[in-house]
Length: 147
Image (cartoon, rainbow, N blue to C red):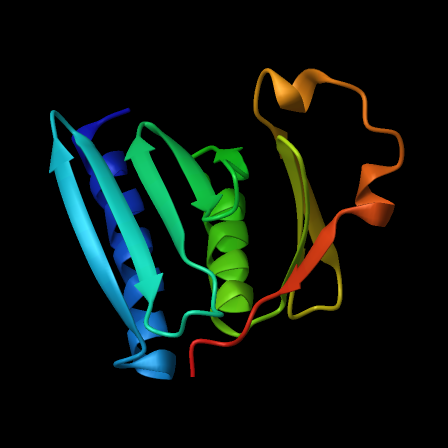
């Protein structure tokens, strides 16, 4: 990836934060860090019942939500950056549900176009053990909007 491509991706990611600042100003804090061409951003909502998120950009992009390691591995393409922006808008709007069970989590993000994006994670060793139908009986959470 050239420096120009990296700068364009950084510009697009910065635009996501700027847009969030316009719609939900004062309702979250941002922590940023970076070294050696990598950048990490973490957004923490002020409301306790809202969901935080983060991303890391080191060539590829990892977008995560603050639920037991749930994340998406993305490429620095226009399509994936649009997806990241949609997920961020949905998280800030409180259109997220989670199901938690021992060692695992499933997060559903309801996007503005009516589709939903579902992602699961598991943490060893408990997350490796079979738990039949855990999404049906696990603890359910719904997250609030940032505002």
